Length: 84
Image (cartoon, rainbow, N blue to C red; front, side, top):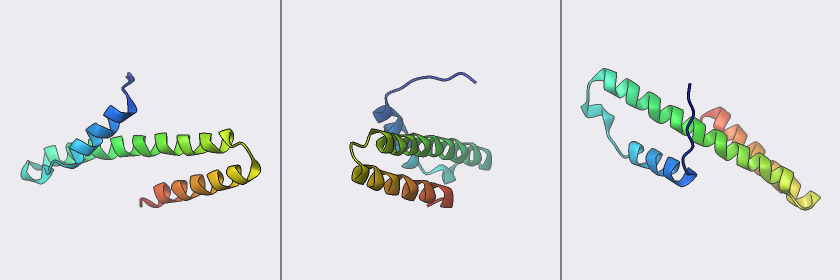
């Protein structure tokens, strides 16, 4: 699989636009593929956000900041694992 690089803001805009489309007026195959694409993009967005939250732990200036960054990371990870 080839990878491409696009700005994060564009990536989030694409997800936003796709999520505003109602796929249910199309046939079952389109619906399935469309929802699969949106799901895959959201999983990638979640992974990027989780990676950034982890980086906040590493970049923390002091132990208190590190603790709160770790708590945010763990909460975010739990929400992703639970499927919101």
